[in-house]
Image (cartoon, rainbow, N blue to C red):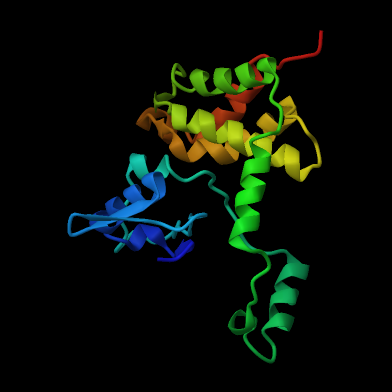
Length: 215
């Protein structure tokens, strides 16, 4: 088994294949012929999704979407980035000479360290209130699950660590909420017809929920 699974254009996988990923993504194990095999730690799933073509694709079930920590729209590279791609691939394929940049044990150590980042009660309640607001919003048929609340909490701890802080601040929550929550929402059809996107609604919720301030 691999430790990093890259599913390119995952929405081309059949529903049966997609459902098979649920156990691996949540339980960190796979079951074959009634025998369960634990997956190595760390185990990560990265996936791309074709946003244009519909023929030959299958929508990802809500249960699977909920197990992806983040959804990021990459878009096109800028001018400098596109030139850099041409230069790097000009004479050979750099993908054929990739070398490890970190060991699995180091990733596990970083994951443990992230859990030690402090989250004050007021900021923790801010995370919870944003997620709960999605469950009562008039434009949302199905709000985010407690799994999403945990995902937002953990990613905020990670962002604080990346920014060399020992504590989470409300701006971390504001920054990450669109990337952690939008793909988990089920928007009602009338809202979609009005041209409102999940990102629009999450931004509205973030701007509406009171931000904790120091006393």
